[in-house]
Amino acid sequence: MAATAPLSEGSVVISPRGVERIRAGHLWIYRSDVREASAQPGAIVRVVDERARVHGWAFYSDKSQISVRMLTREDAPIQREFFAERLRRAAAYRKLVVENSEAYRLVYSEADLLPSIIIDRYGEYLVLQTLSQGAERVKPLLVELLVEIFAPKAILERNDPRVRLLEGLDQNIAILHGDVPAEIVAKENGISFLYDLARGQKTGSFLDQRENHFAARRYASGNILDCFGYHGGFALTIADKCEHVESVEMAPSAIEIARQNQKLNSIGNVTFREGNTFDILKEHYEVGRRFQMVILDPPAFAKNRDSVAAAHRGYKEINFRAMKLLEPGGYLLTCSCSYHITEPLFLQILAEAAIDARRSIAVCERRTQSQDHPILLTMPETHYLKCFILNILD
Image 1 (cartoon, helix red, strand yellow):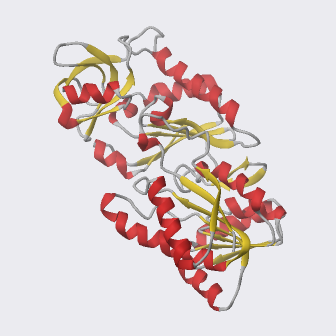
Image 2 (image 1 turned 90 degrees about the vertical axis):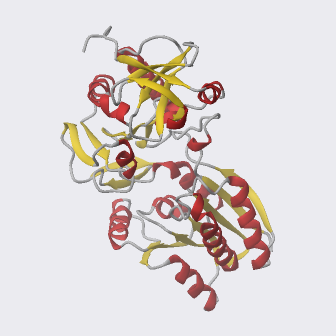
Image 3 (image 1 turned 90 degrees about the horizontal axis):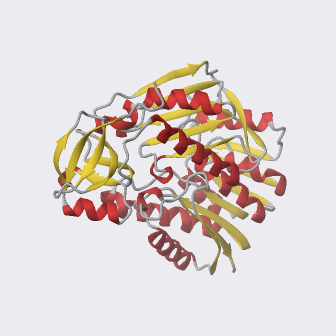
C-alpha cells in the first residue's frame, strides 16, 4: 500500500448531542446521534455536524449501537502513516512504564486513540484484536505495520470476543503472520509463565494485573490465601516473600498450568487447590485457620447494570469472609474488574463488609489496572479494574 494512499472515505452527519460528546473528549457516538451516513460498513469517515462543520475522522459501523469511533479531531484524511505513528507512540509509552516483563499490552484501544484495536505482546509474539467493522477493515494494514515496526516471530488474531457479533463480524482465531506454537514462555515481573495464546483467557492471560501482582510483594509474609488464582500470577510472584501460599482455583485446566508455572520457576512453597472460593473461605473460618494476607481477584460479578445488586452481595460476601480470616495486622488485597461497580461503590461495599466483620480497616493503596492499560480521562469506560490493599488493624 502506498504511503500516501488515503484510507478514508465517506462521511457521517451527527446531532448536536454527538458534537458535545466529541467536545467533551469522548470517542464514541451512538446510532441515535447519527443523522445521516454516506459510507460503507467499516469505512473511515469524515464526521460533520448539521452545519457541515468538520469534527474529525472516525471508524463507522452500520451494525453496532456505537456507530462512530473517533480516530482524530483533526480535519486530515487518514493515511497509512497515521496508524504507523499511533503504534510507535504506544510502543514508546510502554518502554517507559513496563519493567522486567515481556508480557504486556502494547495497544489499549481508545486509551491509545486506536479505538476497538487491542494488541498484546508476549515476548516475540503479538496478539491482535480488531473489535469493530472499522478495525477489521484495516486489519491487513495493521499486520503489515506490526511486522515492519516490531518484527515479531508471529501475529495471532484473537477475534473471539462476543462483542464482534454486535458488529456483524464473525468470531475467529487465526494466525496472521509466522507460526505460533501451542505454548510460549514469557516473563512477568521476572517470573516465567506459560501462555496459550489461542486458548488462554483474553489474549492469553490477565495482563492488566501485572503491577498489582508485584505490589502485593510489599505486604506479603507468613501464610497467604490466594483466591481465584488462575495461572498463579499473584501466588508465584509473592512466593519468595512468605512462608506458604495456598492458591484456590475452580478450573482444573488453570490449576494444571499454574503447577507447570510453579515447576518452571522452581518454587516449592505454593500449593494449588481446586475448589470454590466461597466454600473454602467458609471452611477455613470454621476450623479456625488464619492468614497474614488474603488475595481476592474474582471474575467480573457485574456484566451489566442489571446485575449490580447481585454483584454487590457477592463482593460483600467474599470480602466479609476474607476479613474474618485475617490476623490483626494482616492485609487484604481485593479487586473488582466489573466496570459497573465503580470505585466509590466498591469502597462502600468494603466498608459494609468491614462493619459486619467487626474489623477496623485502613486503606494502604488504591490501585487500578497496570500502566500499559492507561485510562483516557474523558472516557470512563477505559477504567474498569479497581484494586485496594487494606490493613486489618484489629
